[in-house]
Image (cartoon, rainbow, N blue to C red; front, side, top):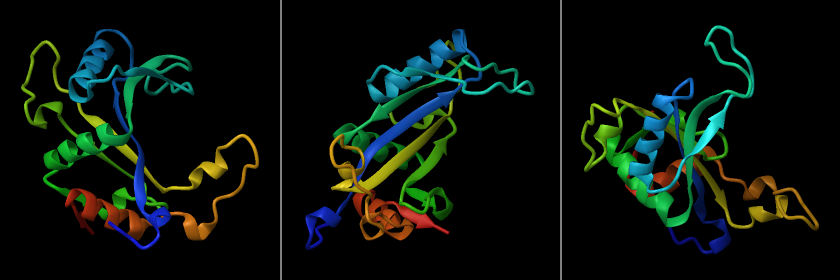
Length: 172
């Protein structure tokens, strides 16, 4: 991973693990329990931004939960998640800026997890944001600036980072 300029090395900013259940209540409590078991962090509830009559969702209704992982926790969780996915990811999972997302159909696929009839079966979505050091210039309070195009990650650089950092095969 060592390039000549350390500012050019990609890194994981955050990894968001989310479970959508469609409504609050008992299923949401069980989904939160699953995320707590997998990540050892307390999940937060996600709230609907719009009303969708076909799905029976109102604006402001609780519809799921998520956990944001950063640093070493994100790396460790992604190693486990890629193991569940048999160390491959589809090329279409990457966007133009190197970020990627994938899904896992059942939490019991993780090592050490077993089926609990009280919880049921829950799948999850995993989204990962990648960037280079120096992107803080677009977020800071004083002297905000644009990140130049040459400093932004590309799809290919994101794929290469995932292949090298996690030993994952990117499939077309």
